[in-house]
Length: 469
Image (tube, rainbow, N blue to C red):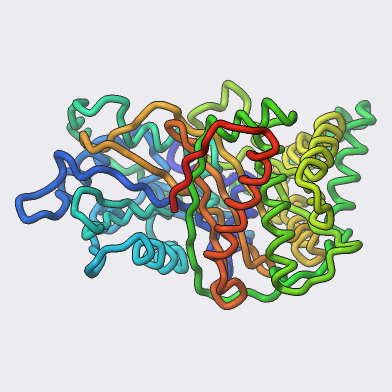
């Protein structure tokens, strides 16, 4: 019988929690830039109390944001319980840039915020309200949420819950928060024992279902085999430290779609071709021989069903896509990526990884977590490239117009660069997260991404593209 006092983490969510270490904080994040508008105070700052009140009035729609981690006895499996000491002031924080409040200072601040894991004794999210941007007409939000709570798609849905589609939507009065008491250790232990007894029966049933699907079993076999097939060594693939650097790039979404329409493939194919072109430039600058280089990107793929919209947690799988960095012709790079992703769609590789998660939900240390560890040790990829579609209409925070949203994906050990994209209100916005010791030239990587897109745009012909940095 379900107990509304707690909720178990899924296998994927628990795997992201287990992946966190001193040098690998596992939160996703974003830098939002908005007009100060009605939030600007007489002193030229930002009214953070109005922001806190507005967000606090909507948290009842997202119960996970007022829950903390708790652990079962003996096995130590993580579960969510209500935070009896929830204080929104801890989570919605206020800071300011020193003069002159430049974009470079904001990105450095974002890198410092992203370098630290959230406090596990509290709900695993923070929003930093940043005033002091140059000119005083805009402010920023730096957001981070642990990956065990959300994936890219659920993060986008939460963004739309915390903001509004019109500038004049009223602040909701916050309903009283009455936290449920956590279950006792005895209750958690008894529920865990029942689950362990029933688990093998459930797993056997799922394996029987898979046994009749040859394609599914081949997909699972290929997923596990990928974890043992090592990608080429590059300067990006070294032990990483605890610090982070953040960079941004904005492209006109219509211009990217125009390239897709004229040269073929999907928007994500164009993105991967741009990354391949940029990595070719990066590796050449680092004097890495390109001939025979097996350079791969992991591209997360949502497997969230329509009836799961609005649900928190992770419902993602991934493609591992070889990037043709040795190919000098940008059109051929795009064509090769198109062929690869078309084959991945036919083979249903991403879906099968999700099936593996479903089969192993009952275990404490899941096969999915073991497979993830094997993949990290075997390094089947060189970097992560994640592309999440966002709303194409403007959003507002207490009447303040949201202008830009630059996402951040966490980086794993042995992977010094992560690339995340988010489409919003006509722009394709890139966020680059990197270890500054291994990638001190992150601004050059950003420029190389812009140059690689410019190559494809020129092949496709006009229109002009808007780029901002």
